Length: 333
Image (cartoon, rainbow, N blue to C red; front, side, top):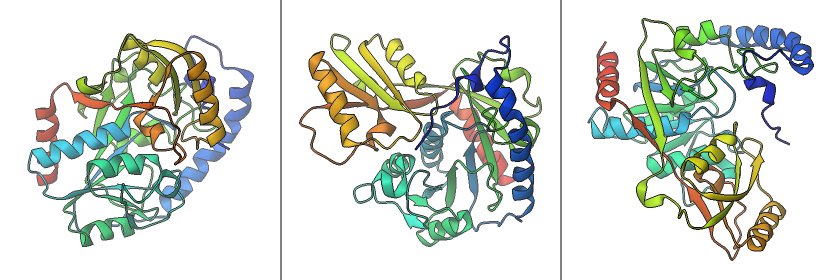
């Protein structure tokens, strides 16, 4: 059973901490102690090919996967690598790997939803043991790795680490799990980062906290023009993300008529009963079901008899040339 992100994780800084957050704070101290022990257990293995990590400092979606896909496109387009591979843990899937993902053969229950999105864009390896995954990518002709997540995984050496930040939510209440969303103390995350990627406008003041000697690349997400839904139709929307309200806000930005909205927990595995209930509601409201491209990967493999629209997004850089030059210069060092 997956739980929804607690609202107090992203409470406004002017609001007092609720009792639940206060009660969970001692567990955050234990979490930090366990994290430090885990980090000290490994000596990172150096892969035979460059490793570029796209990570974040909070639990839940900050936009890592769109950033990883966009970086893959920049790297291949800029001739930095000929056959780069994605490397991911395959969160939510049963496969431990190392395994080369086949988009048309595997499903989200086996390799996770994010792995399927990555596999649509390039060769993708799922491996909970990251060094073994790196070896498989190299054996498959890979000449660079882009890790989607893994900043907190100390087993594999990273040549470049990007920390992705959602401008709308920042670092939340800045407490460690489970009292807050942080996966590790900010100071440690900042030390690991070579650069930061801020998606959207900085609404929580994170820019003031970042190290001045490390670059920040600004970006935003857009729906491709040929995939924008009709604004004259009605929709019943649903999504299971770390912060599912991001999808709802995107639909509002597109000026869609959303008749009803159903948020689910992050990486939620939809059941046929869930989808039949949504279909029934959509028919009653003469509306179209719409969800994220990521959620679409987790729908049960059945014939529903209705159209369920998926909304893809692209990451757009403010200065993609600067990103390319940063990667090139750091790989040459």
